[in-house]
Length: 173
Image (cartoon, rainbow, N blue to C red):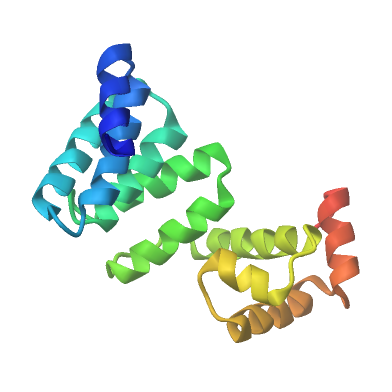
C-alpha cells in the first residue's frame, strides 16, 4: 500500500475535513504528471472543502496550489494573496506575488509589497541566512538577493547586516 492510499484511508476512517483536504492536496501533487485531470479535479474539490472551513491560511494555501496548477482560475490568486496578508504570512505572500506575475495579473499595493519584501529580506538576514540560502528560500538567484539587499540598505540607511538584524529584532525597521 502506498502512502497516498494510506492517507486516503485515514481520511475516510476519520471523516475529518482536514484529513480529506490533506489527502486531496497530496494526491494532486503525486498525480499531476501521470493523471493531470484527476489532479486538477482533486484540487477543485480541495478548494470546495477548504472555503467553508473558514481557516484563512489553509484556504490560501489551497487556492495557491489550485490556481498555480490550473485547476481554478488564476484570478483566485488575488484571494489567496489577501488571505495570506490577513494571517501575516509574508513568505507565502511573496510567493503568491510571484505566481500573480507569472499569471500576468496585477499585484495590488506596490508600496505595501515593497515594504513586505524589505521586511521579509531583513527577517531572513536576522535569521542569519546567507545570500545563497535566502536565494533558495525566495526561489531566486543569489545576485538578485545581493541587489535587493543593496537597495534595502539604501532605503533603510543601515550599513551592515548586523544593523539590519538588530532593527528587525527590536522592531524598529
